[in-house]
Image (cartoon, rainbow, N blue to C red):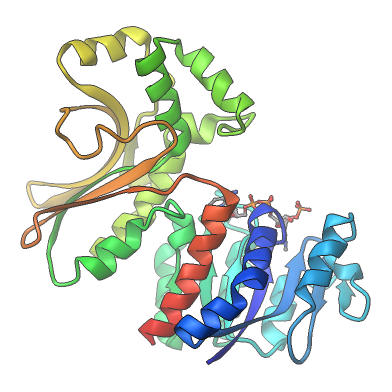
Length: 344
Ligand SMILES: NC(=O)c1ccc[n+]([C@@H]2O[C@H](COP(=O)([O-])OP(=O)(O)OC[C@H]3O[C@@H](n4cnc5c(N)ncnc54)[C@H](OP(=O)(O)O)[C@@H]3O)[C@@H](O)[C@H]2O)c1
């Protein structure tokens, strides 16, 4: 089965995804009968578009690596054209969305996803912004158009957080979800516990290693975990939670003494995103939690992540791993594309 893709955003994740498609095209074709073809790549200044057939991806990657913008690729470049225009006019099957996450108005991802669904494309997104802000509207539009929105790369990427809950636990009732969904904060808390260093020293180290951003507030204040939790809870419980529905407290205020106090009680402090029922009402929280040593999330250290589902018929099921990286995000996009073709 042939799938023509329109890739919006050609930064770290977009380029890594492009390279992965080049490297694995034959493997994906042999193993899944799926013939992936990139029809267009859109970036901030325009697009490279193949009206028929596939873009010469290898040439495009080399062109961009040598400093050329996508829209100047000879024979394919369209300076100034927007993602929305490409999505509304080009014949394709899937939008792969990798533009920057914008939590103010969800743009440009929201425009891209809306145009894709209106043009009959499925969507595979690494971009959390439009999904967190406009979850219900976008899911309703997808279902009205008979399309799917896949969001593994936006919900802890290489950690199959959603697949486990949606596919592997199908038929079970999910009673609670707990997750370590952010690698940066887990790295900081692990360094503080294992090396006895301060929050500030652990954060500096994470920044030096490229694990934490120069402005780490999204991670350390718990908002990145919150955003992923909103998407996971909405998909698993078919709800319409927004960011304001989550009680959030991050790790900025955590001291060495807090870590030691938890340790003296035999517990481990972790930043946990949770969705749990209280008096029949589902409550979402992000907070540092002192976990018992036999809790399945307590031994997940450094920038590893994990998610644990409590169910009525399958007991507790936990999956761990999935370090954050552009490779992990690109791999999650590819996995979603493969699942799209299997789920149809
Ligand atoms: N990096 C990771 O490990 C990771 C993991 C999971 C999810 N994600 C998500 O994946 C997405 C991409 O991340 P990234 O690290 O690849 O970011 P990035 O390197 O900043 O790439 C984003 C690209 O989109 C381009 N862009 C901006 N506005 C655009 C528009 N209107 N139309 C088309 N392209 C536009 C940017 O161009 P300019 O640079 O010129 O603005 C840039 O080339 C983000 O939403 C991020 O949250 C990232």
